[in-house]
Image 1 (tube, rainbow over the protein chains, first blue to last red):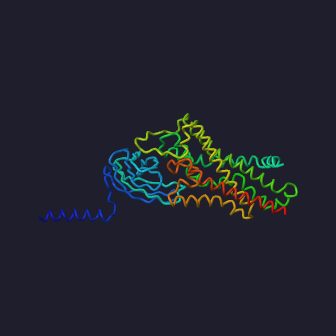
Image 2 (tube, each protein chain N blue to C red):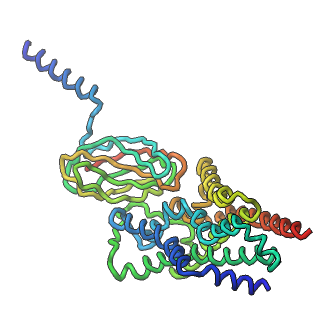
Length: 128
Length: 259
């Protein structure tokens, strides 16, 4: 009984740490929602991080809301950032990259330099 | 008389430093953009490379670049009271009109080449050098832009027609600035006004979701999806009307100066 309460306490503690730290990182194979506002004049914005599940696998980006055409790429601080893909309409995109398994990865969106207003983009994605 | 004056004006303007300046205006931003994109972007078609080169810098600064072609030289003449010395020798209307003709021809040529040289390089020379690696879209939506309707008539027809369109607009943005300068003695305001007009109209159209009528997107269409060709005539008609009204005002000013 004592052992069980100790286990329960450690699970609760772990869950509390994960939730309060705000860094709840999804596994790369699960679609995760995003909803970001991209600043004007060539500004950029990121989705949350995911952990890459497989070396060099293309990420899947699904766009359900798109204010105006933008650029998007797979980005990882550890390296392997992919090339920019034009996202001109809602739909599904596969995103090239050479990010290695286990690295934190996100999608970076970029507005055009001639864009004088903010752009909203929403949908879901997975890094794979 | 006016033909002779135009010839004189061309002779006076076409100098080595000016040719270097025009070459910089034509090539600088397309080269910077080309270097910036070539390794970092996904391209599905060779045309995408050309459209990307015509995004960001040139569309943002277009009216300012057009003013730098020739209109900016008029500030010096105004400052040095050149007109006082000119009027006894040449009728002022001929002098102004010849300036407008030369400004129109030069800005048209610079704007045309700013687009046409990258077009020829990217569509015809670059594929021979194997610089860009085109990718299979793999189901990704391929962006299709305005003016691509002209591709049915051939790639070169598309390139020439599109470059003529940019040239024509460049000519009217340059004239906009020069006529304002002829009408007022405030060079900074006169020459920056076409740029402000362009940005404000861009901002308003973007804010109301009417990007297809924005001055920049109807000239450099990469930023939006394909639109019917008639849409590009809306901001152009407005620009043309502004030029006509300003030209009438200059004529009035010149005529009044004789009275």
